Image (tube, rainbow, N blue to C red; front, top):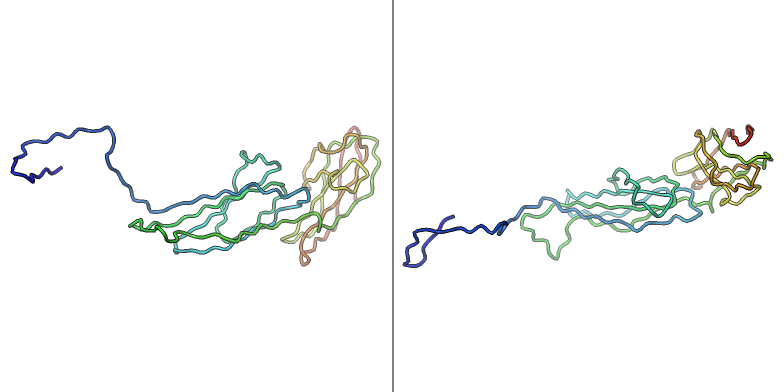
Length: 239
């Protein structure tokens, strides 16, 4: 510290009293980040699958970056769900059959050295976001006959040979009732053993549904389908 005399009085010494904290400190910021979280979106009871999202992007610098994260859940309590890996383009494929969806947008932009951006647009601008989904109202449904079992079905495993193009979905459902109402069915993925724990416990039948959804240019073709299930007894179906 340089002490300079500005009067005729000669300065012979100076004492610095430390305040216990920095009286002034500044650090230069190279990047600014902004984070936006959406409200939780409800796909509704007719949701078959979320499909994709897209948005319009305006960059104010060649270094501007936008990262989009997605997470889905079977319930509105999503705090325990993990965000997806970031999407870095102006859109992406979601393909999740879970009913609830949330999105996070992280925007990054360099900061001018003078911090002189008041009144001007700094960083990227995201607008016109569109999220698409596939709903059962437009799905093609195939039902098997209703098989009388005499016992309550407890588990099932299915296999299917099908052509499912991008942008289309194929779901398998089972019910213990003689029903064509989607709410009576439990849907699951093929090639895995599934506990049928969402069916009516008063039903002693088995009926299967194939639900095929897609656009008019993406047809789903099922070649073969087979199911094996069990309860108090065992029965095998091949179709």
